[in-house]
Length: 453
Image (cartoon, rainbow, N blue to C red; front, side):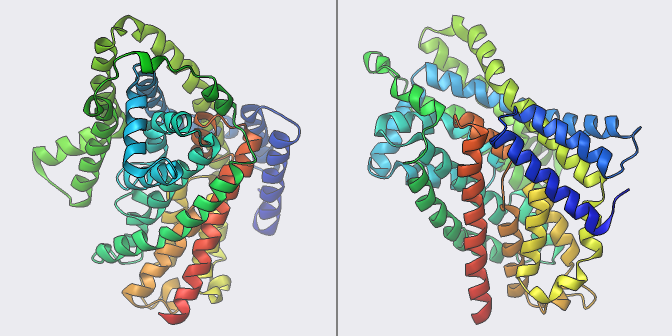
């Protein structure tokens, strides 16, 4: 089996070929990712008898994680759209923030929502509001898609209690200094959000999404009917968020007893979104559209199906990379790069994020490699990071790498592009480029801070 430099070269060639196949040769993402995954598995020398199992393991992991979440979230979104609830929420948001900066509104909403909620789930939940904000404000759908994506992504990687930053903090020895990590994450996240705000505004003027053309053609039928109340419209979105937040708090505080078990159970995304769906059903019946539930369910399955399968294909590629020993190779050769200071954990996290797609995996793996800041035998000591503040900056640099970059093997990439009406080619110009700018801008600021702190 290939190891060392040869493994790195083959991986880089595989990713380059994947991008070219999707963006230039117009190969369907599912076929491109699955094909590259299979060829890569064979070329790097994985046992032929193990390859089908590896592919199956990677593919199935999506169905046990976010597959059902995507279906439930899509159905909730359709109900909000068909009953006029999304219109009501869009109007309320515009009245609160103002019509001149709707991209700031969805960015802030996403940033808040993703503190307790995974960004994939958060995007699906908030997407109906984003769509109707685009219609009501006349703002670019692409701009609002990226603004929402950035808001969700920033808090997802920088602010506990999401799994990535809270695990990274614990792995470097900051489990008793989480308040410092949270406060620093809140402040540091302003940097990538600022970069994303300007880039989203810029690129939104140059790219038109498929959805945007449809949005411009939507009639004003909802102006002629009684819209649901703001509270009723908000409940299907707010209820899952509150339940998932409660589950995060229970896990974070190690709450015991039946109350802790109940909160953790209700906080699971599948259960929380099921509750959100149940709370959305009264909207249908109050709008006298209860008989359309079957058709809406069918439509949601048709919409979510391609997203789930493409996302699963990306998971296959990530699984092949893991089985190839890529992560292990990085761990074994990390010492030679330790002279880079804060740039070192950023680079490792970036490589892992780009290679296997998961920000959480990239962050936890990198943090595990760094070790405790209190240990003389750790990479933290080799980097001279021996205080809680030093360790906090390391966690922030790991988080910056964990968002660099979102592309074809990242489930979030497909959630954003598909729900935002973007083609894969447009996704590379928007989501991928934006996450690159977010990560790099954050790292520049962190390097400057390290000179003074």
